[in-house]
Image 1: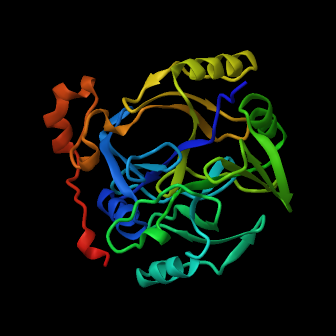
Image 2: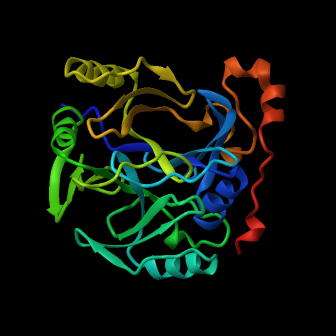
Length: 316
């Protein structure tokens, strides 16, 4: 039987200034802005999608930028670090590049045999770059980043929890994940154990709860093939006591949501239909795209949003 869940679909964070958000993820990290739309639940706020060339599932980091939002704090009950995958010989390139733009970078760290670096964006969002030679996905290079050093997509994510047992039960019994390894208080899970499906649980029984605002993750979405497999997962979760939402149409995928036992908001999102349904692949992210129900309010929505632009010339 094929697994219903095949890894991470996207990760969504809360951000501050919209222009700084675009500058960081496209200009410095070199991701492509594949969609500029609105938060469907808060239409006066942008929703940016950053990813590889086509915004393939497993590569897309998305943000809700709230101008003037205060910074949140990392803590238990949250996804605290999003890890992206890079080539095995790319760490020195990224250390030099990040320092060039005044970003404080950790020393090279080691975890489960992989080398990585850790840093934060301008809002305090926790980011890791994990060097590995097992990821064959082509990266998207924005401006001066050589293709061999480009970000390939997600490596994984860290859930910072006070305990792991109930979350582990959810992942391994109902979400097609399996336990892979333990390193101290960190427990690794994966569907296949490869870049793009890794979930680490970092356990701290005495950790302080996080405060969600700019610089913190709103939710993590796991990928499933289509609406048929999504409904199967919805039923499994419902039958096992999870309070799952109805299916929500996000235009580029369908979604269901629920909270895992440690407090992190989980989403199950379909791989279909993708980001090219309303823009040509060569021009993804160039125009403000609205869902059909919001089009009658386009003028008001556009007037409420802060104008933003891509600035490739700033990041040579």
